[in-house]
Image 1 (cartoon, rainbow, N blue to C red):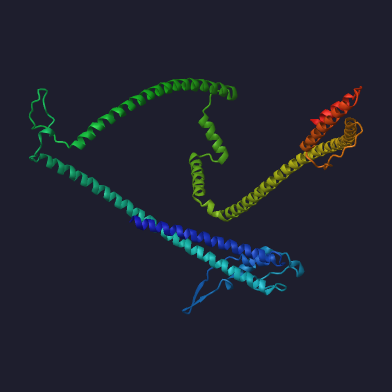
Image 2: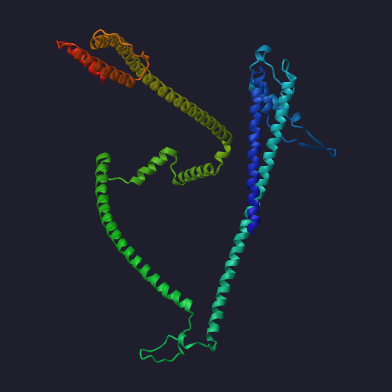
Length: 479
């Protein structure tokens, strides 16, 4: 039975989905049609043709023959009434006030567009017929579901009665079984009826339990102790709450007495005496509904209640389902546009942030380049100044070398005392150590020559005063 109910519920859900799909197809068809004829000058006429309601064919019996009138043939009267309500159409200014037949293509209208409109209307009618059939099937399934639910309730009641009867029978059976005596073989360690003197007592009036059940009973005792403690705590809290409620009730009773006194004073001030509020309310109701009899007034109130009940039972959502779906689609499209705008703005914001960062980096690079440029200008000035100084120093060094060479030549002449010597010509590229050896050799030869001359000549003063600069230069040479 439950499987049948579930199957019916599944069928109802599937048919509701089919109805939703058909409604979506109808909306899509209507949207396509409106987009196709929106720029046509016969837009109003084509829209009326498309929106023409479907009427099922009527069955007429004449001499045993059944004649069916199509929706197009039966719509001539409807077209006349609709044309009366329409008055002038948008393009009726071209040919005056005319009663247009919705089943005939007007002059100036493209037959292909009119044929497309008729076909679209036929498709819409087919979709509407399909939706109506599905709704009828859903109603049948709902009725079947109600019948099955009633059957389930009846079966559940019968099942409950059978379970109660079975439980009663089991109790009676257990009572009868308890009266039956039986022999049970037990071990001594299974007996727990020992006296304080470790002696066994009479076991005729004892009960036999399994160990698992006995352990469960002990465990249940502990649980009951915990529950008892919780109930005691809850009882204490309830006592505190009860005392608080009594205090609040006393305070509210005092406030009620005080407000009643204020009401009586206000009545005496406004009406000059104490009046019955119910009478005033009844008089206001009579004045509002224009009824003097209370029974009529009750009838009016009952009618109002019935009207409100009918309104509450009406399917308000079904009445405005098209408009609700339209606004839902519009909200969905608006949300999509908002999401696209947010994403676009986010990307633009990220681009702007990147550009600002690049701008800051470029500004920093420009500042650093200016600093480097200023530093390079200073370095160029310093290098130019030092290059000039280096050139001057080179010139001074060359001059000093020249002077040094002259002093060396003069020292040689002074040491040889004008004698011509034929020393080996040394290359300018010799090493400094070789020069030192040559100069030492020459010095020794010159000393020997001087000693021979001194032995041959008479002694006379040959002291030569050499300036200190020459001495320092000679020391530098020999070093």
